[in-house]
Image (cartoon, rainbow, N blue to C red; front, side):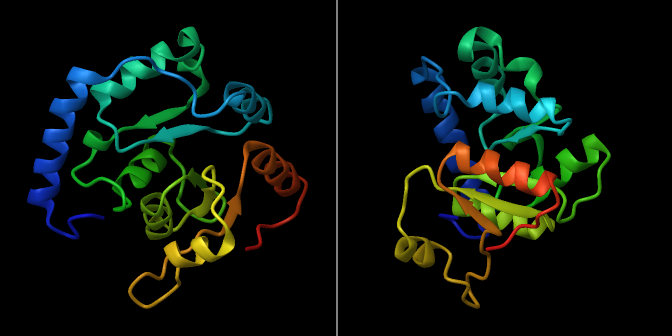
Length: 182
């Protein structure tokens, strides 16, 4: 988002970030406590789960096997990294590649859970359901600021969840026939 549609500048920024990150990354921890349990529970419901990240594959693969002694590696049916496509999020290319690899058609029945405006934009552009994970616990006025639904910034999440227990409740409600509502 920082450089608009200037792909050359974005590529320079990613290259510089990658060079710096390569020298300084270290310990890998889960995003939040108990996430592995949630992922395992989602898999037990028969759901297909993937990761889509703007992180380069070089780092992602190292981190995936390092987090919680490698117990996350087999939890995902697909993983797409920033350098797997020509354009990174907020472009929908990564989400479309994941759908292609899973042999599913993008649509409202495909959810993407993300924690940034970039994630929401990519999801909406891909024609999927956007679940915004509000881990920062931003209040409603701030959410309306970052998702203004204006002509310039039209993309809004379909639903906002504030923690993984809310997400789990949403999954169970939808699995039992309810639909998503903003």
